[in-house]
Length: 216
Image (spheres, rainbow, N blue to C red):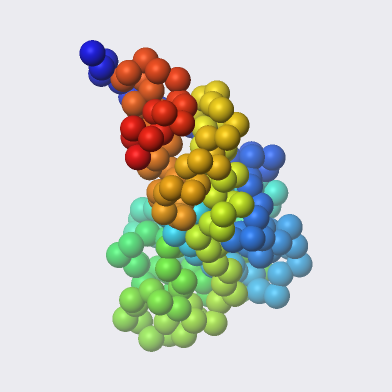
């Protein structure tokens, strides 16, 4: 009889050594490595959910000594209270619905004070549905780098990392087995590992190809 698995949760590491660099995110990682030698003071980082935007942004924030803005801060505090001369800010993710006036002033003040700002979102800023025309033009002109969906090699490496994050020991051939049978996306990788972990706990069985076949 299956047991009810308890949701103890886990905390993936956001350390530099834990960030997987591959074809989908190499350009974004290069931007972080090139800081502060950027052509602009602001960088927009976009990509699908689970693509590692927050992880990469956290790496940049640690290097830059950036202050991570609370998602509600723009509605509570004026931009002039947030931007310090030469400072660094992280907005991860940009809150929606967009606080357009506050975001407009934040962008302007970051440049005025020669500070730095990194913003993350699923969609590129040029596609954000904003009504303020001046904000729209600034967003469209921002330096932007996108993280794409994983290729085969990156998907396998991601599956390994997700298992390691959960401190799960498995057959080394399992990531390759899974990569050939799931959708090639970050969401699918996270979903299948979560399901395998839950099934393993409930059935008190190790995560094997046989269990993977059952879950899939």
